[in-house]
Length: 636
Image (cartoon, rainbow, N blue to C red):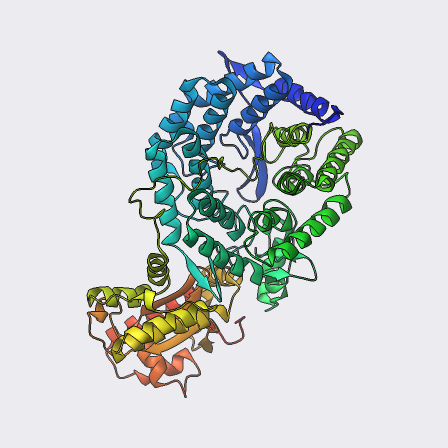
C-alpha cells in the first residue's frame, strides 16, 4: 500500500534535512552525537558519539539509506555513505564491546547488508559477513533478551545468513540457539530466561523479556521447520500469558520500582516494611514493554488457539493507549512512543490485509505531526531531552516511521525484523547441535539447567535419564518428577532431587527479586551497626528468604558439591542459592526450639575454644550481610 498523499514523505524529508544540519563532518566522514542517560552521583543526560542501530550512528545511517530509496535524492545516499565510512573506519574501536543486533557489531553487519540490497555492490555483502565473523566473540553471551542478548543475535544472524547463505554464519546461529537452550529456566508450566536484580520476575516484554525471545523462536520454527522450536514457543507463551491481566488487556510490567521515578521513596518504603511499592501491579504499553510489542508474537504465533483473543486485546490496548496520549507530552519514539506503538498496526495490516489497521497507523502519524506543530519538535524517548537524532529514541526513528507509512513494503520494520522465507524449511543444517535439537535433547538441557546438583550426581554415576519414555503434561515439574522417579531407585539420589526440587517452591513463594536485591544492598550498607548489635546480644531472627536443610552424607562424591551435609538455602534475586556453613547450620538446626538471639546461641558454646567461637561469629556476620539473619524489629 503506497500513500497517494505524500505528507508523511515530506515530513521524513524535513527530518532528514534537520539531521544533516546536526551532523558533524570531517575528512569525508559524517557522524552525530546522541543522548544517553548515565548514572553518576545521580542520573544525568550526556551526549556521546555512539554506535549501534538503537541509539548510535548506525541507526541514523539506516534512516538516510531508506530515505534515499523513497526519494532517489543523491544527497541522502551520500550522507548515508559518509556515515557508513565513519563506522567502517572505527570498527576496531567501537565494536569491541559486548553487544547484540541493535547495540553491537551486528548493527554494522545489518547496515552493510542494507547497502548491498540498495546498491547490489558485493563489497557490502562481504563486509556484512566478515564483520560478523571478526567480532563474533564480542556478541553478548550473558543474557537471552532481544535488545542486548541472545534472541537479538539469533534474529540478526539469521537475516544475514538468509541473504548470504554463508555456512559460517549458520554455525553462529546454531551457537546462539544452543546458548539459549542451555539456559532455559522453568516456571510453573512455562519457560523463561534472564533474572535481573531490578526485576520482580523475568519480564514479558519484547526488548528485555520473553516476548522478544518468543519472536526469535517463532522465526526459527518457521525458517527451519523444526517442530521442537514450535514446542519451545508454546512453553514461552505459557510463561508470558501467566502474567496477562484480562481486565487491563495487557501483560504485567515486572520491573521493580524505577529509581528515576521513586528515588528516596524506595528506601523509605523498605524501612517501613511497606511492600506495596515492590509488589503492586504496573503496566506499560510500548514496543519495549507491554502490549504493543507482545502483540506481534500473537500475530505470528497463530498456531495457538488463544492467540486470536490475546491479539485483539493487545490491539485494543494499543489503540486506547496510543490515542489517549496527551500529544504535547507523549514520546514520539520507536522504542516507547507513538511511532513504535504504531508498528503493531502496520504489521497487522501487512499480515491480514485489513486496511483498518493501516488507517490506525496513519492516524498516529497525524498525531505526531500535530505534536511537532505544537512543540516545534518530535519529543524524544529520553527523560528531560526534548529532541534527539537517534533511531530508537529520536528523530531518525520518527522519520523511519513516516517512511513506513509512505510505503511499508519498501521500508521494512526495524522493530520486528525478519529474514525472507522463500527457502525456509529446506535449509541443510547438517549436524549442527542446536538447529537439529530433538525434544529429548531439549529436555536433557532443561533438566541440567534447572537441576544442576542432581545432574552432576547422575553424570558421575553414569546414569542417563530416558525422557523419551514419558509423555509431557502441562506442568513441567510434574513431568520431571515422572521421569526422575520412574528412572531412579536409589534413595540417596532421590533425597538429593527432592531437596533441589523443593527450592522451586521456596523460590516462587517469595517472587520479588527486586525487593531481595534492595534488601541485600541495604543490609550491606548498615552492616556495621548490625554487627555492633550482634556483639551486644541483639535479637536476630532468620529471614523469610532462608531455608535450613539437613542432607545426610551421600555417595557419588556428593561432598564435592556440599562440603558438609548441613546447608543454608538463600533466595536471592538471581535464584535460590545453596551452600554449606556447617557450624552455623548445625547450631540453628540443633537449637531451633530455643533460638531467640545470637548471643544466646553463642552462650551454648561458651566452653568451646576461642577459635571456634571466632569462626562462628564471623559466619554470623557474613549471614547478616547476605540477609540470612535480620534484626527482629527489621523488615523481613
